[in-house]
Image (cartoon, each protein chain N blue to C red):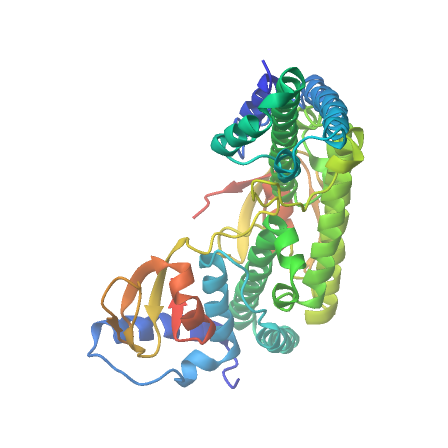
Length: 228
Length: 242
């Protein structure tokens, strides 16, 4: 990333989007430079993460690069005149906010469906090592609390927290993949089957849809749409 | 009535909001736990009786039905006809079977209610901790006394778990810096500096530009990240927030 001032990117990004929306249909594929730097990647990951009902892939590389940049910037601040230094500090604060908010949005999801994410290797793979440690610690903490509060007083057969009842009711809460999401198309997809019973709909760049998460899940994973 | 106690607990769980929590209802939890234990013991007894009855030569159809945990009522009618010859003991068998199932279901429902109640409360405690920057010692006394001793323990351990995660992340991402992990996550920072009035004595704090003495009633112009935690817990007051 060459821009020394990530904040400028934020503003630019917003303007560019506004332009893209009002302007004629630019149907180029994903990959404008402004959309691929670490800040943009993380901004998008952050919005996606906050919109999606389930945990998404961890953007470890973007996070690390961005924080390296922040460190570099912080070192530079000392040698700048006060006015510039303050602007740079503000900028650094905002990037930190983004990182914080992103990580916390993920933790919140992990806390809500701990057993679900720990339950299968596929879900585990989406967690960073730190998040995995956290999830395991949290699951243990929760179980300890429930045991102390009442589980230990029940019959040993009733103490499990992960059984499936005879009526097929699963004790592990899972994210609702059919939750409604708003998404914007980033790269023209073409005809897309939203619903098995309906005609395909053409998805063009910058179109906005509201739909069930499960339908656009794979498009989101491929980066073809973004949540808003 | 069967399940009433658990229902009461579930209702209490529903009444928990982000801003309000009723006191931990130890008595109700104890009642439900007790009922659950009793029902489970009775169910085991009846299941034992059923097994004895089965081994004494009920029809194979009945057996498989009992093992499967009973299907619809039509199949039990078929079973009843098949075993009609058995008369009295058959009625007893069906009674026990039905009771055992009912108790089994009630036990599971009770457990669900207990779990829901404690889960909701844990959710509240987590939210509460975040609002006081994950410092259990800053939880207001009037809220603290509504939590059970176990919940207070949970709060402390949760804060520790979170601190461990924060340290690991900061170690990895910014070894020399802090992420201001517990700063408000709702709004992005707008101003670098804030003008604050001291409401309660905070003593001296160290900022980048030196030591500041925060005496009650004085006003200061400080870096937001230096004093944000004091603002959230109400020791400082933000003048002219934008």
